[in-house]
Image 1 (tube, rainbow, N blue to C red):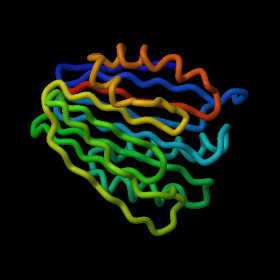
Image 2 (image 1 turned 45 degrees about the horizontal axis):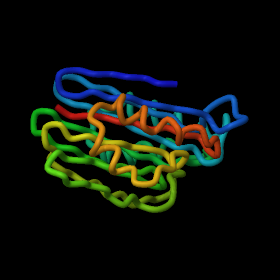
Image 3 (image 1 turned 90 degrees about the horizontal axis):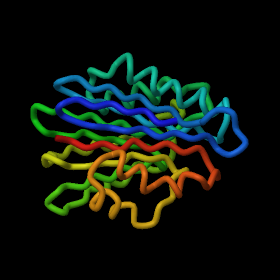
Image 4 (image 1 turned 30 degrees about the vertical axis):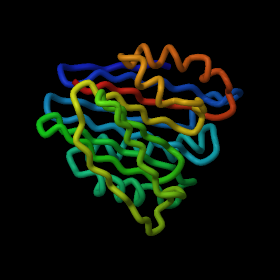
Length: 199
């Protein structure tokens, strides 16, 4: 499944594929952009299949309902929503187009890379573990971004050597996604990635 969205401030593409042999993907995502902000979330439910999807889809619902809140508040809401569920790894990214700032937080094995045209990379380390309603520590990173910056958020189903070079060498989310196509056929795990370009 490929999903796209764009406006004058950004262009984004989401690609999702279930683990080989599974009818549903255990990952879930939420993406919404306005003229002022963009918020996206990616969650990887523990395991695969329907029970993993049940956990990850809760994250999408929480962020959709409370997307106006700051990233740390959203992370705590997501953690509480996972009580009595299997659990999930979670990443939330929020962009303010007016101030050209990005706020990002992650728990677990979902990764985020930001590439700036000045040839700088940002690759924050997530908090290890997963969310399940138990007390959790969060780290929220805040960055300013350059016009033309590109980013990717991806679950652990995507394994690409030298992924940073694709962000540098290919300009649009569609171009980058095309280059990643051969890596999406492994089928070893649920796979989701969100690629964006900020104008």
